[in-house]
Image 1 (cartoon, helix red, strand yellow):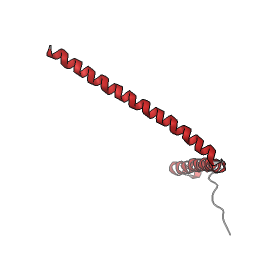
Image 2 (image 1 turned 90 degrees about the vertical axis):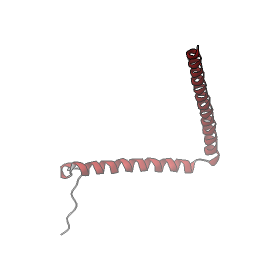
Image 3 (image 1 turned 180 degrees about the vertical axis):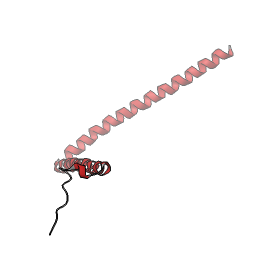
Image 4 (image 1 turned 120 degrees about the horizontal axis):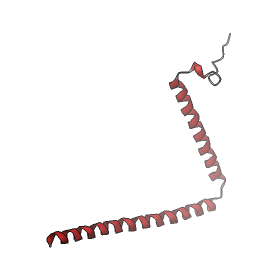
Length: 93
């Protein structure tokens, strides 16, 4: 006399909202893990030279962005200092 578990998929009213929310989150997690798995499989099948070339291109781009960011921050600091010096000069007059 074996009883099968209730079919929650076709009878969601058997679950509390919290239980349904937990099952929904597990389903999202499953989809994310499947996506990661397929991405890793693609990387594993790709030639190492292609991956290295892609990483080199990414490194060049990130280096350029970092350099531009430093220059922008330097310019803002310099402008702020010049504005402060100008304001001090006006108050001394």
